[in-house]
Length: 286
Ligand SMILES: Cc1cc2nc3c(=O)[nH]c(=O)nc-3n(C[C@H](O)[C@H](O)[C@H](O)COP(=O)(O)OP(=O)(O)OC[C@H]3O[C@@H](n4cnc5c(N)ncnc54)[C@H](O)[C@@H]3O)c2cc1C
Image (cartoon, rainbow, N blue to C red; front, side):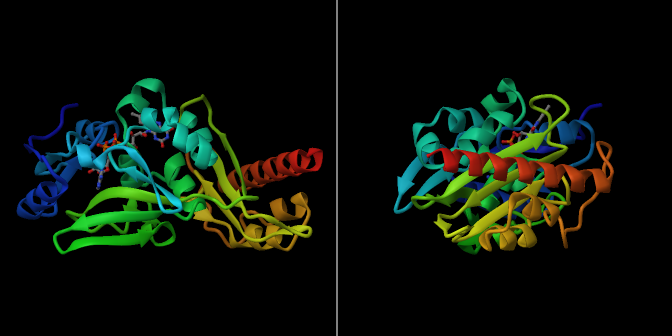
């Protein structure tokens, strides 16, 4: 199938992109790497009146160290994240997860910001952003604003972005010393979207428990979701099997073409148990 017709404009700056979107109205779309948007157009899942190409806005690209955080420009490609020494050093969760995003050809074009803005429920980067307590920086007609990851992902392909608002960059706090991460996903083939996935950050040890925990499941609900029950159990120092047993308590889990709801709950529990066991083995070895 071919897409319906649309106007095309290329923006030279973020401000110009926002101004073009304002002129064009609600049905304009920003075009970043095009890896998801162009497929949606060709399947006529979306019929925008205008594409605003932001792909050449240099200011939206790159990874920079700022006070206690890494700032990732929205147009930074997945492949650049995978190759970044700063990401490997400071955000090993992202460094591990990025290799599970699609295939090399898609990682060469697809962008970090595109993945966050699209908010696919089974995507790795939104889950990592949530686990790491990222802050999304947006630019709209009324100027810039900042939204915490906890308030950004609202539902199936739904975010706090208002129509015509541009995600300019994501700021991810560098985890403190003593924190550790876990990541695991189940997919039919390497590079496919996850049937169920886990991205987590654990704060420094305090006795048998942890200072804090951010446990995020993806591919099991309408968006990446934190598990308050598992987080509380981990902080309280419960055994891995107890934490896993309550992994999806209170969460709205959906079945899909890959697995029934009960199977997804089982997958989530297994992933959490495995990662907690791995971390505990590694820490006991030190
Ligand atoms: C075969 C295939 C397999 C894939 N597998 C995976 C996978 O396993 N895991 C995964 O996470 N992803 C996967 N993807 C998606 C891929 O990661 C995309 O690159 C990503 O989701 C979107 O990034 P993009 O730059 O291509 O965005 P685009 O396709 O250009 O845009 C996507 C949407 O986000 C909006 N948008 C983009 N940038 C901005 C911005 N800065 N501000 C506001 N809105 C913006 C666009 O308007 C559009 O609505 C797959 C894609 C394909 C084709």
